[in-house]
Image (tube, rainbow, N blue to C red):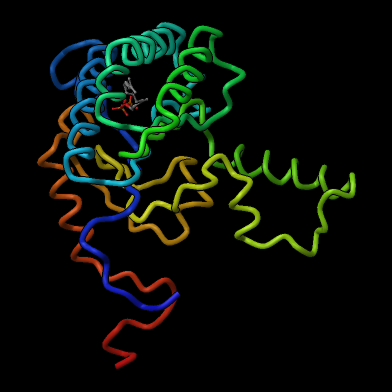
Length: 244
Ligand code: FPP
């Protein structure tokens, strides 16, 4: 890959939605109120992404580590996902959004699994924004599952280990078919990836914002895209001035 200035609009934006709890605490509200407000920010961000013509948006909705939270909070989060699928699916279909959910699947309740399947099925032919929710997702788990599957294929003679390249590996990940994120945003001030898209983030620009997720909106997204446009991406090559 060659040195290139960032194109004005990233092809793929991925967001670690952090800070619901802190947003609620600042307002003396229970954490669940922060998650509820976070759902509003999801809605607003998806609408903005559609209006801006973004191709791919991935949102980290529930990590494989989030099961360690108190049962009541996990229950409240699951309730919100149900509510979101019920209330927003028609609008997503109308907006030509294609939905995809990446993650473990087998550990969530049966009715949520069904909603996930229905949403993917219902939007499969849509051609607008590709909206991916990382749900019960962990990057290390994803990489281990892919390696396990490829090792099994090699053992059974269906795969020649010598043919394994980064591209082949990527084509077996949950995200196969989606370009790697150009921009990963994390809200609420922490500077880490927290097991999000570990393989796919190799060349992503990282942007850490102090905004708590429930305060994220169209204007914050537009500001983040402006910051991205101002960065030069080199993919390991020299910058354009050094090459000239
Ligand atoms: C982090 O806030 C956020 C989450 C654990 C999950 C994200 C969930 C939502 C945005 C709510 C609903 C989403 C959908 C798709 C309906 P935190 O609790 O870790 O915040 P804290 O670090 O301030 O405690």
